[in-house]
Each structure stands twice: as C-alpha cells, then as structure tokens.
Image 1 (cartoon, rainbow, N blue to C red):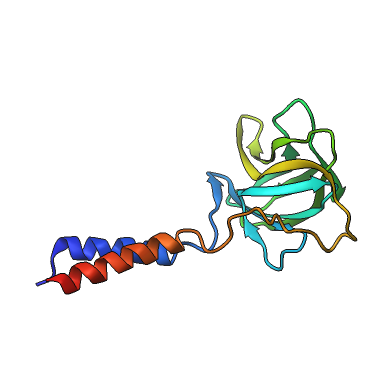
Image 2: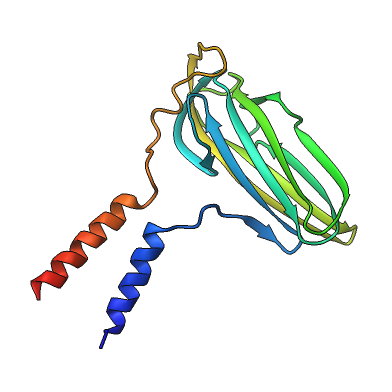
Length: 193
C-alpha cells in the first residue's frame, strides 16, 4: 500500500515540474495576462519580470491580453507609482478605452517601451492598470507590476532589435533547480531503505 506522504510528495514534485503556462490576473468581470520581451530576447517572459538591468533608451516590448467575463467597458493603461516617470511609450497608446465589450471579448495590446533617463541608478516598476466597468455602481480594477527593472545611467546604443536582453537576469525555468534537488533527495531516500 502506498503511504500518504509518498502521494503528497509526488503531487508537490509534479506541481513544481509542470507549473501553469500563464497566470491570469482575475476579477469577477474579466482577466488579464501580461508578458515582456526584452531587447535581444527570442521569447516572451511572463510578467512580473524582475532582476534585469535596462540602459537608458533600451527598448522592450509589452504584450497584454484582456478577456471579459461579463458585458462591460474596459480601460487598459500603464501607471508608474513614483513621482518621476521612468519609462516612455515608443509605440502604442498609454491608455485604451473599449466600450460595451460583450462577454468573452478578448483583445491583445502591444507596446514598445523604453527607460527615458529621468530616473537612473535605481529600480523602477512599470504597472498595468485594468478596469472592468459593467455599470457606474459596479467597477473592478486590477493593478499589477509588469517589469521591475534596475535602470542604469548608461545610454543604450543599438538599432532597436538588439540589446543585452537584461543579461543580469536570473534566467532558466523557475523552480527547476529546486525540483531537481527534491528529486535527488527522494531518490536517495528511496534507495536508502
């Protein structure tokens, strides 16, 4: 007979090895997904992107998909929580307003953004704000960080398609090393008996 602890351990291992493909930000009226592609990246990174360094003027792309669950108006915009705006939008609008969106309405927005040099030598978040409004008395909002990058004072020199891709990032599959360690301990524990 299989012990309960063995079953629990397998659930933990499977959960670590096969995380969900994308995490949604949800409320009663809709959900949003966000990704970032740094200059030099080949693939999109799921937001929140952390532990990256951007140079002044180094562009990156942001992709956001919004889906409604009910009939409502949808507002999507960027917000910077600090006093100084650290980012400038190169392509795309800062704010999108969509009226009378039906249930299961889906829209993907893309932007090209870059640090503008007004804030350097520190970390700067770029937040996404999404508002779902089915009626004036029923409004739900979500505000989540898309990227939390260190902005260096160096100027970026590139042609728009190259860059360091946030080389100071700690890439790889999240939790992969931890799952390997857990697996190694389980194998050692099993064969020790």
